Amino acid sequence: MTAWLGRHASTAIGSMGRLCRQPFASLMIILVIAVTLAIPAALNLVVKNAQSVSAGWDNALDFSVYLQRAVTEEEARNLASIIQQRADVESVQLVTATEALAEFREQSGFGEALDQLSENPLPHTLVVRPGPSNTGQTIVLLQEELGSLPEADAVQVDTEWVQRFHAILDIVRQAIAIGAALLAIAIVVIIGNTIRLDIENRRAEIEVTKLIGATNAFVRRPFLWTGFWYGLVGGLMALALVYYGLYMLSGPVARLAGLYQSKVTISSLDLVEAAAIVGIGVFLGLFGSWITAARHMRRIEPK
Image (cartoon, rainbow, N blue to C red):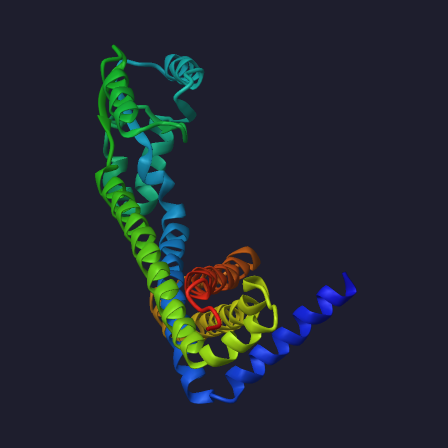
C-alpha cells in the first residue's frame, strides 16, 4: 500500500509539473473549464436569491373570506375553528369588523368621516392560509368550497402573479439543469481532446514503456492525474469567479435596497454547494481523461 501510494504521489507531482511547464496552454483549458462550471452555478444562485426574496410573499397566497353582514362574531369564530380543522388549511385568522374598521381608520386618514357612520359597514373576515402540500388544483378547489359556504359573501384571492413567478422559476431551474448537463458534456469533450493530444505527443514514450512490460493501467495513470488537476483547479477557479461576481454585485444591491429602505442581502454558496462545484469539476476531469486514455491506450502497442 505504501509503494502504491508513493507511485501515485510521484505521478501526481509529475503531472502537475508537466502542466506547469506549459502554463499558457494549461491556463486556457482551466479557464474554459472554470467558466463552464461558473455559468450554471451563477444562474443557480440567481434562482436561489429569487426564492429567498419570494419567501416573504406567502401572505399573497392567503384567502380573504368576507362573511355575510348578518354573521355574528361568535358565529365567525366557530366557522374559523371548523375551517382550521381541514387538512388542506394551515391557519385561519379572524379579523373582526371592529378590528378592520380600526385598521382602516388608522391607515386611510378618514377618521373624522368614519365617525359620522351610524354603523360599521365592514364585515367579519377570515384570512385562510392554504397548507404547503396544496397544488394549484387543490387551491382552486379550496377557493370554491370556501366561496360556497352559506356564511361567505365573497372570497378574494390574488395568487396568479405569485403562481406565474414560481412557474417561471421552475422553468429557469429546468433550463439550468439542461444547460448544466450540456456544459458537462462540453467539459468532458475538452478534457478528452486535450488528453488525446497529450497521448499522441507521448506516443513513442508509451510504446517504449509498454515494451518493457508496463500495463495499460500504469501507462494510463499520469493522464488520469492530468484530468484530475484540470478538474480540481478549474472547479476552484469557478468558485473564485462566482465569489468575485457576488462581491461586484454587493455594492449595487445594497444601494438599491437603500433606495427602497429595505435590507436585502445576496445569498452566497454554502459549503455543500461549493464542494459540489469542485467535486463535479474533479469528476468530469477524471471521467473525460479515463475514457480517452482507455480508448487510445489499447491502440498503442509496441512494434
